[in-house]
Length: 225
Image (cartoon, rainbow, N blue to C red; front, side):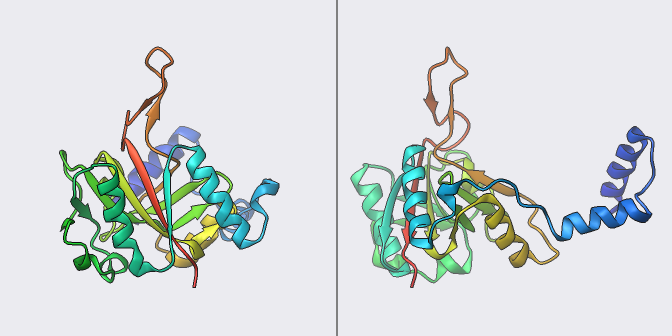
């Protein structure tokens, strides 16, 4: 544990007027972390995997995301280019440098001008992958890391997300199960849940898209093998 984190935890302990957990309380806490309880799962999220994929698409569209479904990963770049052309959006794209994206045939889409880096103020379009999709609410689960900077999720006006259908699960608990297995003991610094484009009704109770993040969220769901 680094020094800064220990200082923060020590401050919290002083506020609670106690020291580090020991004995039975510590065992209870470690057991809960190792075997987190599952809460009430909506019936709609407990169907077969094809039903979960269909539910994810339906719920994502209900949350004002747009969705394209493709047959294979190699079809994803064409789907991205087609969406940008159809919506008359900029074709300058900033994208994560992760291996999953790098393996796709982006060179087959000369309309796209791609930079692989974190997003900056003024970028219009970003492309990322999602770690998982949550069917019960049409929500994306995205994790941060060296090859997946969080700025790509929030700064550009248009966020395009590639999601393999095999990583769509029924519930939030299922998503966390996947993440714990993938992360082992090194959880990501940040986990973002994203449901539809950014919106706010704070101004005169009128819904405004793009209030605190992307104006558009477009999902490319890649069929399972």
